[in-house]
Image: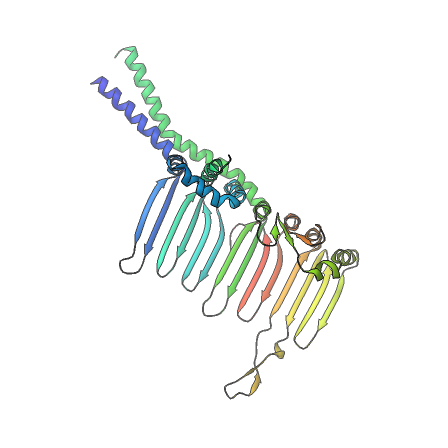
Length: 145
Length: 222
């Protein structure tokens, strides 16, 4: 019995530590609701660390293709990834037009993009750290690097 | 319970406690980290752009950009005439026909006052310098507008005059023209702008929309 308790407590510790590590960078949240009949309703969230892990597991040529396309914008992405953490709570763009509303802001260190329209609502929340991780992975995958 | 078991249970309990407290510590650490950049971000100047449409659509556009962020991002953008934070002027007349630096030197060294005043049937233009700021005011004369009514007879209508008011610190103008002859150094101008306090830069009031551009230390829209 004591041995079982030891094994169970060890397993519990391992799971707890794994959970802490998985979620330590935050969560990417996506909510899409279409108002039309039969419209899509997509709601999911994934740990931000999954993006990094996914990019390591994805076929290298796909990452290289993405890196080539993004290449000209890498300095801009790098700088954004570096500067945005300095503004953890700010509204950068807010546009309202004929029942449509678009908002790009940072809330508690996460980039939040909200699009509200009569036909559909889209809400995306991404931790700022994800941009840095994606930029790192794309830069390392660029041809010649 | 022997020593080994007691020690193992103690170790396990410690590990569980660490796992439970680590997210709290991480959040606290992030909060501390956030406080420091927030504190520095609070002292940053922000450029605010507000466009409000008064027509039925009621479109409103609010853009807020920290000056420091703009200064660091602009050199990364290379699009059309914008390269490395500088706007290249293609217009030969601008480059060769007018020596803007000489004009600016003259304006800077002269006493405060009105330099240009143009009053015409259509609009009034006023360019002046006062207290280190360059003022450009353009007012469209409302009585110059005529429209045809349903019978086709022209008639005057009461239209709100359109006003454009630009107020730019002279130091920013100097910084803008500090580059080469055919370039406007936008990054240098932003650097100069960040040293100023709360300042209204551009105000445009038309019948159906208003545009405001100003700089202050607030990171929220009003």
